[in-house]
Amino acid sequence: MMKAIKQIGVLTGGGDAPGLNAVIRAVVKTATNEYGWSVLGIEDGFEGLLGETRTRPLRPSDVRGLLPRGGTILGTRNRGHFAIQRVEEKIIKPEAAYREAVANIERLRLDALVVIGGDGTQTIAYEFFQRGVPLVGVPKTIDNDLVGTELTFGFLTALDVATEALDRLHTTAESHDRVMVLEVMGRHAGWIALEAGLAGGADVILIPEIPFYIEKAASRVLERERNGRAFTIIVVAEGAVPVDGSPVYQDRGNAQSQPRLGGIGHVVADAIQQLTGKETRVVVLGHLQRGGSPTAYDRLLASSFGVAAVRALAAGEFGNMVCLKCGEIVTCPLSEAVLQIKRVPPDGQLVKTARNLGITFAGEDD
Image (cartoon, rainbow, N blue to C red; front, side, top):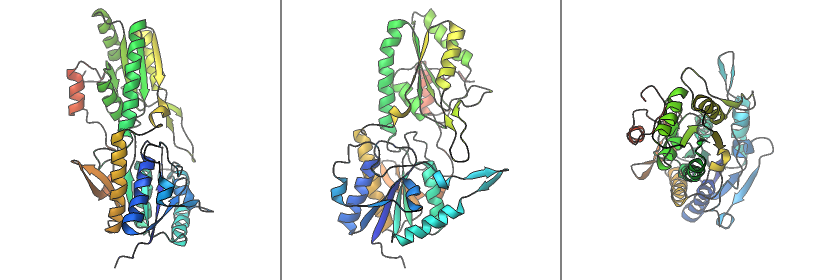
């Protein structure tokens, strides 16, 4: 028989994304108004469950005004003490951290958790579930790369930011007859680069799923020049790689931190300028894509996810993640959601659309 739920915890993990506060608001309002549960906010992700735990009670009055607010009132961290380490090809899980956190969950009298985050956070959530913690995940990533859901909140806001940047870059590129390179986020999946490139009228799109030849990108620049178009717009995802090349990192990380991608935009720009002789400039959007107020749709999706997560807890659907499928909010097993990354299909409809519009990916098939 399922234990009656009286108090739940909610936490946000990984990178921030527009819509996090909207989820927290929906969780609190649904839990208290519909089920009479109390809600405890866990600060700084799973790190708030270690040592002297960092929590705060959340009542409906505490979440007023959160719907349009960016960031997260609970704070967020990446994997931290829960990061998996690899030593001599062996995977070592931080069992001591999990034991401490599970003990603190019991001490705090939390009957279940709502875990809001991306693939890293949901992977940790699954580890907690396997150790007996009742929980439901809420998918969050501006990269839109979580398997199981057609869309993650935060993505459309990031997409709007990137598209607006391209609109603005068009005017200066055309005014100065320049090549403008826009580097956007996208470690393993190029959804932002692809969809922003389509919406913003880019000429070249470089994504992780299609290794590129820089010579082909340069050829497109020169082809446009011959056809009377003296400027070119290139969008590149931070995880894009040249054929026979490797990703570009800001730093390689260490045992306590993950490697950080970044810099491929400058690599591409330098090569384009050398190969074409065209003046080339780079804009790196970086964390501008994460910040600010969520779009209307991201507010709707985040709110729907928050409500659905609480309903799933009430129904005893532990170990699942809420997701969007065919316009409906449903649940899928966390074990499937963290199995792999949702990447852009190189032969998918959006890639075909881009190529039919004359956009090149500078890949083998271009």
